[in-house]
Image (cartoon, rainbow, N blue to C red; front, side, top):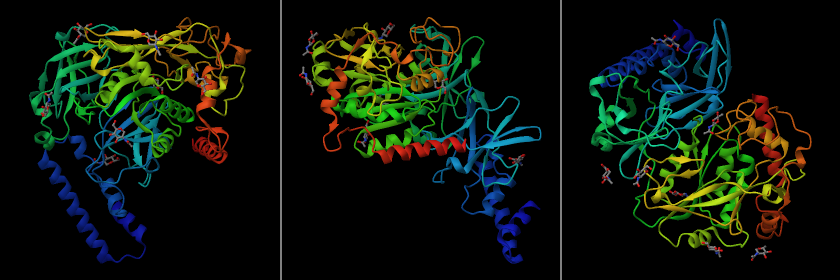
Length: 566
Ligand SMILES: *[C@@H]1O[C@H](CO)[C@@H](O)[C@H](O)[C@H]1NC(C)=O
Ligand SMILES: *[C@@H]1O[C@H](CO)[C@@H](O)[C@H](O)[C@H]1NC(C)=O
Ligand SMILES: *[C@@H]1O[C@H](CO)[C@@H](O)[C@H](O)[C@H]1NC(C)=O
Ligand SMILES: *[C@@H]1O[C@H](CO)[C@@H](O)[C@H](O)[C@H]1NC(C)=O
Ligand SMILES: *[C@@H]1O[C@H](CO)[C@@H](O)[C@H](O)[C@H]1NC(C)=O
Ligand SMILES: *[C@@H]1O[C@H](CO)[C@@H](O)[C@H](O)[C@H]1NC(C)=O
Ligand SMILES: *[C@@H]1O[C@H](CO)[C@@H](O)[C@H](O)[C@H]1NC(C)=O
């Protein structure tokens, strides 16, 4: 009955004959789709249930709407958001964020919001990010054009803290499996005999799983041998994508998995690499600072940037596109997982290995400063005369607000000029071949293979300017958002002594008195002077990364528009 009402309603004076043919078409496609799915038989019942009168109706009503075979593969509930992984048949138009609605319901009550963002996953599907679900509500996903009460049948929902969330096939054909929930001790190698990798097209069919040996296990990364049936892609294509999980022997069973192992390395390893220096970073909402960071580092010899994006909701995608158009090779990799910075770096190291001689792991508020005006490549050469050097460690200077009250318009390198005297920790630049197969890394340092060692760079040769304590407006956001892995929550009384916290700040999110003057022990205009010498556009009398006023106001308008939409 619903079909008829909708049809007549939407087309006004359509004749009964047209209606008749539509009904025939409808029944025909319904039968066709159902039999297709029954015969393929490999799909889980959840997929079959997408052939649903209401979704089919949407297709008939508007022939341009996506086909009913788009379905939720599965979802993961994180503390601040839920991720839906949508599965698409080939060559269907993908949804945009405005096509979709996150529907929160509680008994009769319901509210709707557009997703925060929609990303493409590495298998041609999509990842939809829905905002945090209010307590007591359930969340479902709908297409905004559909009528009330229509939503995607929900797939299995996973907890984020007990999950195999990613897997990549490494250059040596082993699978590197990223796991949440093993809670292995940081920095230590675990006993491989306790684990087993399990591959399968359907984990419910216990007799059809392929088991495989674990080669290394450390932190939350398991490396295992990839079964031949999985490496030989084409033969298995008929079964749909294969997934991998990890079984803990003796009790705990198998972790749920959303991970489909795939290759993220495009190029063979044994050739001349296209880039000398690359950077991996993990960040959230870096749109405002990315341009300066990329352009500056390009000036000292970085050629390739891998941005692991931890749930940004700013203009980072547009900003990266703009940099690409200007010739910078920057790529964004969606990384929504919680407290997984080390795993993200391991993932990035695998990705960058075949293209980069050296990979630096720094944050977007960190800038290599080379007082002698040499290039990064020269510095690295000078420190790696011995082949045994697999890592170079650069000390960091922490800069304070330097008396400023507002974000410096010409960028952080020209703006902040006062810092603490003593260097704090250091960051690494890695030769990827020297990485130990465990991929262990702790606070930005990788464990190396036996026979490799590291070199410490003298702080007068190269140092990192870490713009750690910026103006209050910026600092507040950074710490509130807990991007730094080791800071659980800066408002939390625990961990008050951690080095990542601002000394003396306490735990309240209000601007401490005298903030602008803190963390200022010595004036250091070294990088500022260099930047003004190297990056000033003589015609515009501005630094190359400074935006035109109209660009700035456009961005500000976008930002305001987004706030209103929220
Ligand atoms: C069709 O979808 C609706 C809403 O998504 C759901 O309540 C209903 O159970 C589905 N019907 C079938 C036959 O799966
Ligand atoms: C990895 O697997 C592919 C496909 O099966 C094969 O062609 C290649 O030689 C293997 N590489 C190594 C290092 O084993
Ligand atoms: C960027 O680098 C990758 C290799 O890491 C390469 O495949 C790609 O073509 C490059 N993009 C541009 C725009 O040069
Ligand atoms: C990513 O951001 C979330 C908050 O959105 C945070 O809880 C999480 O720890 C961050 N992950 C990493 C690896 O920094
Ligand atoms: C580096 O460059 C700056 C500005 O271009 C210049 O003032 C300075 O003297 C140079 N330093 C060295 C050691 O060459
Ligand atoms: C080269 O490295 C050595 C230490 O290995 C250091 O003492 C020297 O200053 C460096 N030279 C330059 C030009 O950076
Ligand atoms: C990797 O590290 C482990 C533990 O530190 C060590 O036993 C192993 O030999 C290393 N691997 C290589 C290839 O050096």
